[in-house]
Image (cartoon, rainbow over all chains, first blue to last red; front, side):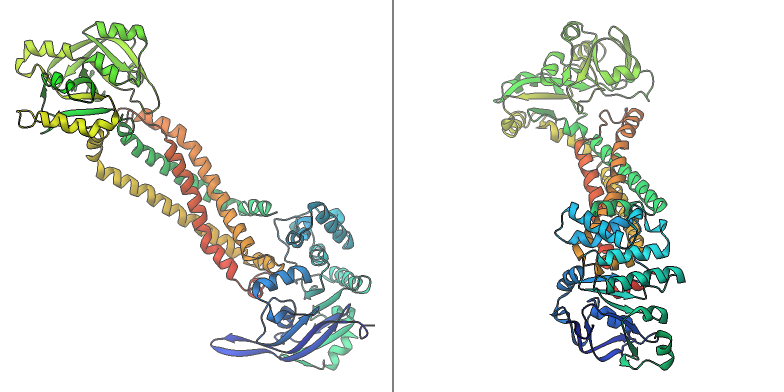
Length: 238
Length: 384
């Protein structure tokens, strides 16, 4: 099913390095990768392998040294900071390890936040937010502040915030990394549902084989290059 | 949403921000009080009329002028009314009860000072009675004087005990009018001097000239002084404003010091608010990275930080301004002997508000700049 779908993310010979103590430290080297529309991809690899850097480059949060990242037909490596900000607002939904909700805003207001940048009316925004919160089964908690919600619930609010603009891709960086087993399971089920029922393209960075098991495909990064996953990892995942 | 965010952020760290608001309030209060003290110093200048000139002895105010100058001055082109008077320098009971007291030609004096409002019947009895005195409402209240009371001043320049009957109490036309003056008939003083010290009689300390047109002030002043050039008592004629400024300039060093202190207070509170904002922004760098991730641009972040800073400074400033009024009233009562007019001027309020806004804006510049410049990936790493 995935192979027949349209390519939504195309990465060509992508390289990225950081400067540390006056020296250039390569993080990603000549990465080429395609992700299809509706695909739920898990990016795995040991710490420091460049998973989060790759995710940040796909999501337009960081600039590559060379190569290109084409998302939905747009080469985002050619966009300016301002253009990238606008592009992110319309095309990417973010799910973070630590939820990253704004503590002074209620669940409703947190989910509404990305819609502030759209031309939707207040009434339309409310409808979208309610739909998103219903999707994550938190409609009854919309007036709660993050501190009044459990970790799992906060992550579900974060997912609602990520999907409320109906983005082209969803990127998730260790979405279950800060959750207990039960909550992690709930979040993963939700992401699975988003992929299967709503056809969302999800790119998830994870260390957790149980999380990777929910994905349709898996890529393994090691020392900044795509590599074959070790047998043990494969065995845990599939 | 922006307003909601900046209001909630402003009181997120309740203790720290409440203390900053208190600091801002005290700073604006102190700034307002110091500016009010400066205004009080200039009250005489502010209340000066552009249609009045003061003529005094060119050597010094302490040297008198002959009464014979009155008719000559009256003949100068542009002069409408001429009044005259002398600083009496009397003491009421004891020295600490200081107030300004003058011997004046009452009819012309009241004509030249329409800002002194006296009921008609009181004015008539005041003008009729040679031993009558008129006092400002503030002064009457200070000593509990009522119409008909006998008041005795002990002369310092003109020795002896001088008896007066209070015949009129004047009110000020507006807040800038000095309501703590005491004046009486110059004739009463002069007649007494003719008997006790004839050499000091028929002399006045100053002339007050009412002009037909304020535009003629410079020309008339020159004409008056030219008339008495090379006489035994040369004159110096200047506008009432310049005359009053002469007194203020004697205290220039103190006024400059007060102005500097008021500015230092603002600079200190600016540093305090900036420190609060730097701490708040540093703590929330991760949140700003989230905003940037979601597509919010630098202007939105700037508005959030600037707005929060302005909420703190404007709230503190508003409370400070409100407290300035009762404090100035209490302070004015306590120092009424030195500052007859002690009111919070509109300019002071405008300066207070401008100071609060400036502090809010300047204190937000550096934190906003840092929040805008933070790389998203770096900002997100600060969470967790």
